[in-house]
Image (cartoon, rainbow, N blue to C red):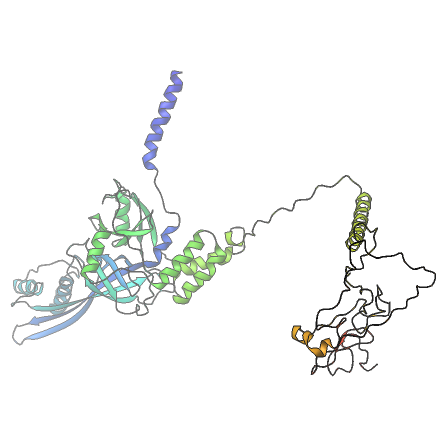
Length: 546
């Protein structure tokens, strides 16, 4: 047991030591920032004039280009505002010293190194003149120098712009670590340069950062370099890997953006190198410098479309990311990261890695259980059910036409549909014998046809006409039959009145149409209604005159 307790205690101590080493690392989200990376190169153009006042005054004018510094930076507006460290655009060494050494050695034919150091000569007169040639310029100076700083910005584009984009310095600080704000003078007119998302500050919980540097001029083959560094303690302004960061600074990292891994945004930049310690300039100071230069950081239309494409790309929806990436290249054909992502998405489109190309899950068809009853039993049962239904329908129809208590005989006082009342002729031109049911086989339609031309027309005298004269009935009974029994009502009851049509109506009504309307015609072959002026039946083709 003591050994077991010792083992558990040892594992607990080991986990406690390993816990501080666990922290988030980037997982591809830095490509939200890398399109806005730039390389900054600065140089000075010195025009110097040497004055020789010995005897006749002579002048010697020369122009020299001096490389100042190289470093990294990032774009914060689509029209080309760039942020870098002041040390990248203002070298600690004065280019006028370099120019003085060059021009003095050329004119007086003396050996002076072409560097940025002040030298002295053995000849007192020449040494006096040399010291008077060095800056600062005074009334007794023997040299007049004018310095112009040239800055070139190389954005991460494919293909890269030849010679870079010229830029001017809007503001610069008093220390090497101060932010310098630049503005390209050519190449940002369309406001389509890729930018970086600029944060507000370095949070107290931020520990892991990415240093985005460009050791050389960027291209598709030399993309921005990303190196992970850690703050010690988290949220501070000091690096834990100091030697690693110092090496990066010597390779061109001054002004390199610091990317917060958790939020994928720039929270500062790093400066130093050349014997100077690494210094972190936070996003707070960057924003203050931008305000002093009258600039507001913002994203462009290319950045918005690009980030929409990233959402599909990082979710492995390559089929959906391809149209968005193509739209980015329509807006900015030299967008290096979008072009690279498009090649990857096209190579993985429709493969197993493409989450957008996977077929939707289909429901599994459920096979119904097989019945043990033979098929002929089901068929016989179906036939029996249909037979029962047919018998039931026939019985229901008979009961509906029979009077209760009469043994199935019809009630002469109740009209039955399709059957004419006794003594009344059937209506319609094609009805059979009066009072017969069903009609003869040669009649069409098989039931009596009643034609109604409207309520007003039905009440008109032309339709109703005078009542018909009564037809005397044959008093003799039919052959083979005797007179029926006395049907007189019981004592105290009178005979029911003979049913008569309503006042002003004939029974049956005259089927002819109202005056002024065309006579309806029907086909003698099929009984269908003929249209006015039709020579043939539109249903069977029989001539209308036959």
